[in-house]
Image (cartoon, rainbow, N blue to C red; front, side, top):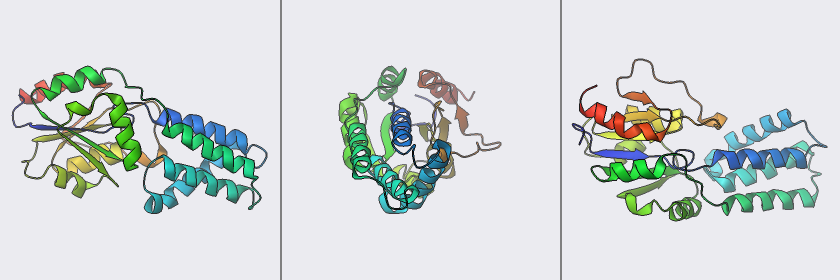
Length: 234
């Protein structure tokens, strides 16, 4: 086991399985539905603004996304959005909620390998029922020693979850610099960034400058070697 490192936390969406791709597909469908009322770029901006406003009310996840799409449709049509468009937005959201889980490359073998020697924790935000469904369908549930489905990821979130761990004893792995890496670093853990091609604009943040506990990997397949290197002080 790597020196001092005892616990590894994993984000779920777009770290363990596909997620943002389905949001992008639904957003493209949304743009097609409202093509007579707004240009796609303008519609994307209005939808992003609605999501930003609504996070505090609806939280993260598909249901909040659906409500933000409906709100945006009402706005760009000046309240004249046809009922059939509202119905199609709801249908698109329901399809997202039932979409099969697709694990990302190297996920199963990496989590399985690390679970032998480390305490493995799933730390994800979003809708409780949807995240539980995804975990159940992923086939990874038995590999996690604990599951934390939280309303947001901030320093205090990681401080609570990693409570009792000395600095550097815990690691958080995820695709969001803003939610997975920076607040985990602030809480004294390692922060490992595994970027995906698609990313939500509201999760963007600049990488930390000169932070010794920050690492970036191309994919999860490189994580076991990184853990070993940390144990050897590399």
